[in-house]
Length: 388
Image 1 (spheres, rainbow, N blue to C red):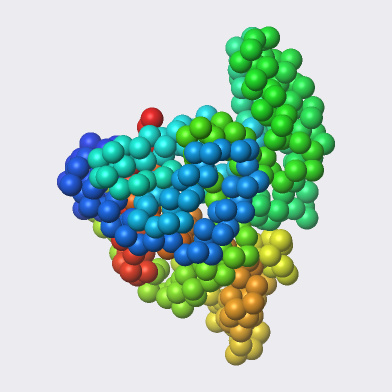
Image 2 (image 1 turned 90 degrees about the vertical axis):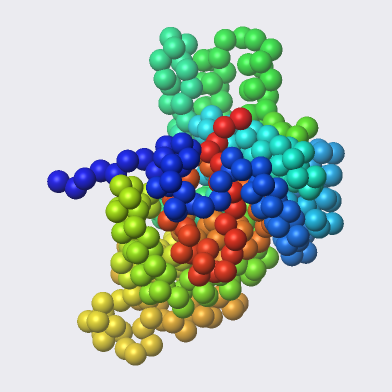
């Protein structure tokens, strides 16, 4: 029987030396908070990222505070406190709301402490494809028991497609009616239903509904919202994927070493690494197609496919040549997307992140990321458990 490790996040939050070995930065230290915030602000931000943010904020409910935060970020010498979550039905679990509020609170605290302009940003995890994780939410029913509200199941043709390319079905109207019947009449219930109906409408992209509602709720606080699943961002991220693919064997070895070190300290790895796989997904046929992790083919598959064979799409066993991957990186980079371990590297490549607000699981997988930050020559952010 495999021995189960103790939770890393609890050890980290308690300030234990065993955890500090894997995440050296200490969010409790005022000196480290100030230094990290100032270093992040000094990095600046690519104008292409600003242009994407500007276009996406324009699609959200009006917010002078959000406009001011965006202009500060565009002007430079501004740090970011980032958080993120999958784009669930009706904002998904309350956890998403807490993470956004926590990012705002941490940004205010870092700005007051460091004297550096610091803005909160919510990263929509629209590259993910696990529809079952986001298709439902739970509310308290009229009798107090949990009531599940769920979108229609995905079809076979929709499997493994990034949620960025999904739209709400007609059933969302029925879910809103069920929710209206469940909530007791009150001003708060009426306001909540009006907000949900304004954003969760049949035919609307699921990500746009989530972003619109989140933007409305935090308009006064100026929360910036970024959907990375767009062509300009993909072009900027292509070099990260190139490094992840070219260095896949080195990254795998270093992650294995980190897993062994965590195990020796009594911790489990939060995200199991997959032998022979890169940290990049490839979208079959088109950017809107199903995505599969790139895996090195077995020798017999390589021989059958010829010398140009480079990768197997793990999960469907289709072989993609290295030349095809290179072509996609150069001309259609949206055909590649990140794994959970690569996503923080992309965020810190694109944004001047001073701190990241995450939950216990995210804190735990940040313990695995030290080798990746070294490989990509990036400074890791302060890591905060999601609290308001």
